[in-house]
Length: 211
Image (cartoon, rainbow, N blue to C red; front, side, top):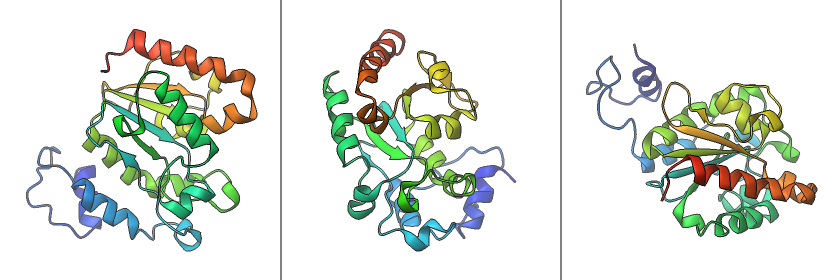
């Protein structure tokens, strides 16, 4: 049984239309996928969250931005990147004439880990199907990973951030170029590093054709 078919079967969704070669209609609509995530009880974060932070933006965007995990303000509003780090992310996008409505923003996990700790491997794995399906549905021209946790999750790499930046990686076995940027929260703690974001943006514009 294909991964897609197995996932849908676990969700008690009819899979008769899906061939074992993985070809068929979209796995789930964005609305159905969000509804499933909103009711998720797969890991312990379901017991401590206020709201599921599924993601927000243009789900037809060429640019998909993936952060690490929701924080306190995100947990209360159900929107990703709404605190100080979110404001900085907005400013970064504006520097290349983009708004948050021009991109899609989400995280590796959809619920806030208590005390803003890093999500565990088990929590990331429990949430993996939601992120994988978001990527498949959006089908972006580029994925931007914010921070080491997102880079480790998507690239399956333990390399330091300095080694992952300024390189074109690829999402799993696809040809979707994937870039690694410093997380805005890190930049707030280390303002002298902000210039590196501009270097990363230039690298993206020079190497990837996004409009």
